[in-house]
Image (cartoon, rainbow, N blue to C red; front, top):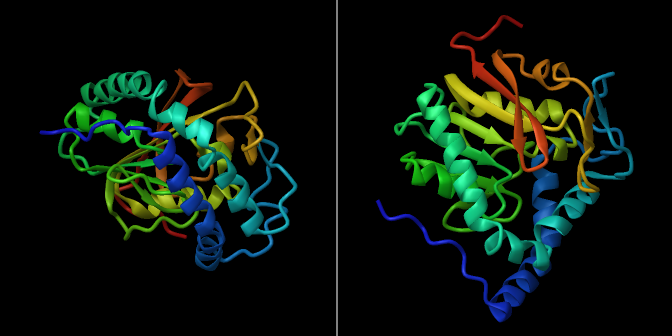
Length: 250
């Protein structure tokens, strides 16, 4: 199997591409707002003693624009595509290989990486033999990453056997984030989240998590497999869930 090469960053082409994306930003924001039922986002979707939404957004458009400020940052995209690329692909390849040995992932799995930016996680999945894998982020990065909002995934029900995300802290509506994972997971499918419990996120984080039950309780149609410590690029806790084979009565 031929793997996609890592992105080649040429300053002129990068500037041209980002300028084009910035011109599209209002259209992107409008599209995501139309696909999402909440127009006022100041309070977020869920607040508990273990999970709090950061205030400050007047609308869902404001939230999307703030997230795109990071996604479209030329300096960060250059770092993600060059200095960070090989290191992250190697780390993620080891991580996914371990999951295969534990029976949580296989070469026949259809896999989704949520918040994949340029697609290092997808490149790692394909490197270890999980060929049917794709990433999703606000801004596409072909051929590894398609455009999508994790509050309203652009995939049919029961599309994936495996979903991974390390961007839970960016969810303005964590309940929708979890519900979309469960909607697109097949019965018996595995979801793995890397989250921060012992440190706060950066200025683009939208929620703060103070206990693992703050995320586990959002998954209404899944069972907890395990919680463990992890060193995941600033995230410290791994949560593994499995989608129930039968739906719980409401």
